Length: 240
Image (tube, rainbow, N blue to C red; front, side, top):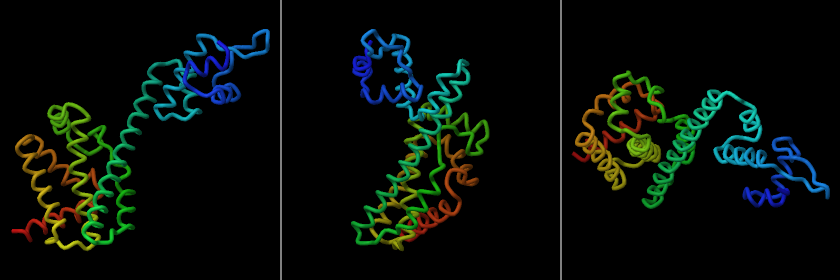
């Protein structure tokens, strides 16, 4: 298959295929009598692998190393590592979404968002990752309980992201000097109470495990977590 045809078949540009050839990642099979480069079926299969790993977020240098590995266990370890990296990026994006939501609510309330605090907050949460519960100092029993109740990573993410959003908003509101009696604080307090009620009604077996997470504060940076809870608790007490 000539270069142009191979590029169209794979959905890449001719320049991309030529670049892969030039750096030795995917050398052309040879030249035809007319001087045109061609690619064999085996090389097109390698191109499909290159595009797969590229879409998974691997660099071209990493892809070269992967394609040179023959042991499936090595490749499996690399894929697991990349999966964790992607989940960590997803966590970071959810932190940003929570901070954006907090900033938007502050703007609507006529309050200047604490930009420096928000930036530091995102940085402090950038390492949070819920793909593996063993990173949060849970006992084997607690980890098994999370797995048994939540079943899938998606369920775990949904539960955790709701909690993260509340913590982020509370921290941002407190840094902005929001009064606990302000309407946006009252709405946040209500969300916090609804989250606790929902947990108690739907997943009572997880409460003890969550309390342990609260105690060791492995998920959130300790100062952030403490300040957010202080704001939420003070808002709750103020409303009572």
